[in-house]
Every structure is written in C-alpha cells, then in structure tokens.
Amino acid sequence: MSLLGIDIGSGSCKGVAFDYNGSILASANYAYATYSPGPEMVEIEPEIFWTAVVTIIRQIAEQTCGNPVEALAVSSHGETYIPVGQDGKAVGPGVMNSDNRATEQSEWWDNTVGKQKIYEITGVPLHPMFALNKIMWLKKHRPDQFEKTQRFLSVEEFILGKLGLYPVIDFSLATRTMAFDIRRQRWSEDILAAAGLPERKLGSLQPAGTVAGKLTPAVCHMLSLPEGVTVAVGGHDQPCGALGAGAINPGEVSDSAGTYECITAVSERPANTLASLECSLNSYCHVVPNRYVTLAFFPAGLSVRWFVEQFCTEEVRIAKELGISLYDILNEKVESMCSGPTGVCMTPHMVGSCNPHWDVRATGVIAGVVPGITKYHMYKAIFEGIAFEMAENISILEKAIGDFEGMAVSGGNASSAFTVQLRADITNKRMVTLKNKEAVCLGSALLAGVATGVYTGYDEAVKMAVTVGDAFIPDSAEQERYQKQYRKYRQLYPALEGFRGIV
Image (cartoon, rainbow, N blue to C red; front, top):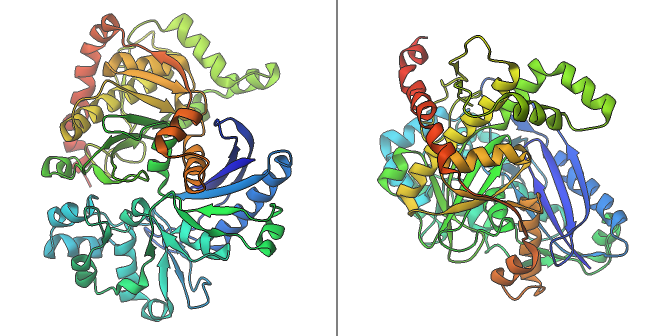
C-alpha cells in the first residue's frame, strides 16, 4: 500500500506516491500557465487545477498497481482564491497568489486598522497578494460576481469539492487569506467585520492531518484508484515541506532551495512581534498541531536559471552530447578554476527582494568584476550571493525565534555539494541534505498517513519516513576568508537606494 502526496504549485502540479518508509514508488508532473487580463492581474481557469490533479492521480495509479494508493492529501500554494457558486462550480477565474491588483485595499487597511494590528492577529505582513484584499477588490469592481459567489475557496478546497467531498481548509492555508486569527485558530471577527465579508463566504476550518472523507466508488473508478481511498486535510506548501524535511519540533529548521529559497523555523508560539514585522517575517500555524512556523524567504533559483540561459549555451550542448547533467560540467569548472571567495558580489534580487527588505524596486546587482573573472566565477558568485542572503535571513530569524544549530536542506537549487557547503561555511550553520528531495509531497503524504493511522503521530511519521543524507559542517577557516566579501555584499542594497529611487 502507498500514500500519495499532491503539491499544487502556481505553475505546475506534482504528485508522488511513497511507501510507509518514505521511499518513492511513483511520481508525475503536470505544468500549466496563468494569464494576465490587466495590469498587476494574474488569473487562471480553475478547471486547469482539476485536470492536473486527475491526470497525475491516474498516472500514479497506473505505476502503483503493486502498491495501490490507500490515502492521499493535497498541499497547495497560498493566497490564490477560486470563487464558487451554490453548485460548487467556479463562477469566475482563479485569482493567483502573484496577483497584486489590490494595492488600494492594502493601503486602506494600513490607513484604518493598521499593519501592526493585522500582523498581531494574522501573523502575515500586510500585502496586496493575500486573498482577502483581492476579494475586497472583487466586491468593489465586480459586484455581480461577488454576489454570485457562495464561497471563496483555496485551491485545496476546490479540489476537495471536485473529489465529491465537503471543502475544508486547514489553519496554515487559512492564514494565507489574511483573515485568520492564528492564536484563536479561527476566522477573525474583527478583520472580517472591517472588510465587510461574511464568514459564510470563507471555508470551513479543520486541522491538517485529519480525515476529510472517503472517495466514492465512482470517483475512485474515474481516477483509476482502488475503492475506499481516504483523503486527508492537507495544508500550505511550506509547512508541508517542513514536515517532509522532519522539522516538527521547536528549534528545528528546514530550507527549501528552489526558485525561491525559504527557511522555515518551528516554534511553540507565533513569533509575530514588532521586530518580526519590521523584517516582514511570516509567522503562522504549522500543519503539525500546537506548532507554528516562521518563514524567511528570498529569490534564489531565478538567478541560476538566468545565468544558464544567457551564458551556458555551449555547456548545454556538451552535456546533451555526453548524456550528463549540465550542472556536473559547471561544478567541475568551479572546483578546478574557482578556489576560495570569488570577490564578486551578486545579489539574487532578479524580481525584487523579499526578506528582510521586501523591496519590489530591488534588482539583481553584480559588483566586483575585474580582469580574470570568468563565467564560472560568476556561476559560483551566484551561490555565494544566495548564501550571503541566507545569512542575512538567518540573523533576523534567530532574533525572532532564538538561535538554532543548523537545518535540513532540500530542493533542486541545493543539489550540488559545493553550494550546500557554501551555505554552511558562510552562515556557520550545519546543513544536512535529505535522501528524499520531494519534501512537500512527502509532508502531504505523511498527513495522509497520520490521518489514517499508518503512523501513531508526527514523531513516528518523521522517524520512519524522513531520512537524512549528507552532512555539511561549517569550515571556520572558510568563513573567515569570506568575511571581507560578506561585508561588501551587505553594503550593496543600502548603497543603491538612490539608484532605486530614480523613477
């Protein structure tokens, strides 16, 4: 028997089936695209999410005939909402997490309730991307569609409804609306009253890792699954990823290294203090009961992708001819040509900065180029910049939740050993990789396992299914060698304020 974890992202959906020990039995992916109907608007046809989930489940069912799926859970990105009518069908497009149309509503909150009060209640810094602001925009600019909408659902709720189950939302995903009280663990009466939004238009709350229901025989047949499959309540992708990385107890930390790098620290209480707000830290409910997560994140993998597209045409050709990974070639060049600090400071702010600055005006910057710098030095400098940015974010995280010794690292942007060692040396934190790279899907599958009694609880689930790979110990000598370059790196963002201010 197997457990299926499904992760619905903003650009693709992934499903992975695991055995009880966390070994991958099958996987499938489905990519899709959003569209922009106007400035700062990003939408999607909701049925695309359903098509992706159905396709993935069918593919995995075909691959797991010997270990059929017995339970599944869905994690998803946050902030996106889907408006549905009384029949559960969408009455309009899904409004995506990257949609920033609701700047007027965000400014209204700041001028009336105040961003500090919102942060004290919800644990999230005021921003147009949160679902509540976009719902308020809809009420003002599309009143007919607002009235037709019986409920505004998260992506996971929408999928539960399509599976024939009652749509419920867990606490971690509810937080991404900016309408959830993280301490009382219920919708905030004060915020909903101020927004003029009836609670009945939002989802029904239920803890992650509990049973949402069983699929009917007809639905199981349609999905090519055996009868009797249980669906558990999932959660927001980042807390699910923390669970899949084994970060479930206070002081445990995970790092998801992808397009964005997200450091997730676990605590007993939310860390939504004034100091945390100044750095725009998100601090909200974990998918694990009685635990909270505090997130610091920043753009990372985007810089690597840009570098490869612009400078690595020849390496891509050679890798294809030899049947090897492009990154094997780049890593070998770094090892042979780029010992020690490059002296080149490169910020990863290709699409603006996130924590700690949250500045949409920020751009990627390359400083310190001199004769003798090759493109391979530039490649290494990208990861030095990511490590420097990580060090900045660890500093603010530790002020919020206390010191920690290290973290578990997963994700494609940490697949090369030298990049993980750089993170360890520059941050002075012990890093361990995970044998299973699919942390979000594994976390979702573990929620399904806990809900159905495969595991007695989260401690047993992590002990059985989360396996550590290699350990990277900080090299104090290397950290010392990087001090000069780190000091220079820290000067870049404040030094360019005048540059960013020119309109």
